[in-house]
Image 1 (cartoon, helix red, strand yellow):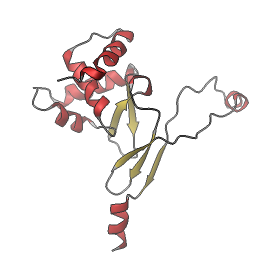
Image 2 (image 1 turned 45 degrees about the vertical axis):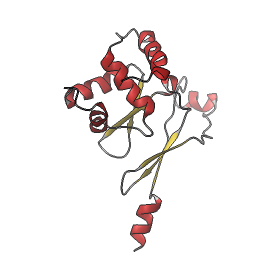
Image 3 (image 1 turned 60 degrees about the vertical axis):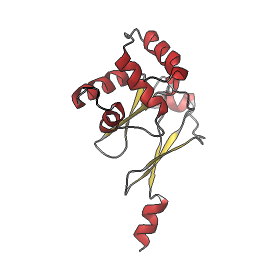
Length: 150
């Protein structure tokens, strides 16, 4: 069941990208709207429950929605891809991630003080503009840190 609170924004996002609005896409994007952290394909499968969807279909849909800019694909030091709603379609504000290098726990941090390089620097290295950035911090969560001290 889709959350009616976010259904309008999700539907508008699909229509804006000229994508057919289907119950499956609405459900998939709604899962991300309510996710507290980025999700991988197996976590999406678990959230979908027993709806007759196979893992390859989930992967295809995740990649398609990422290519369209509705989802953001994150590679967090592993070969495993994680996804979250892109900033333009999420009710969350821009954020970064803290990732535990031991247990892979992911925590979002809202505090973003990253400043874009100057126009001169961008031009000097052969770019015309910067339209996004991603920043992840790796370390040990409190639990893993305590376990490593033992």
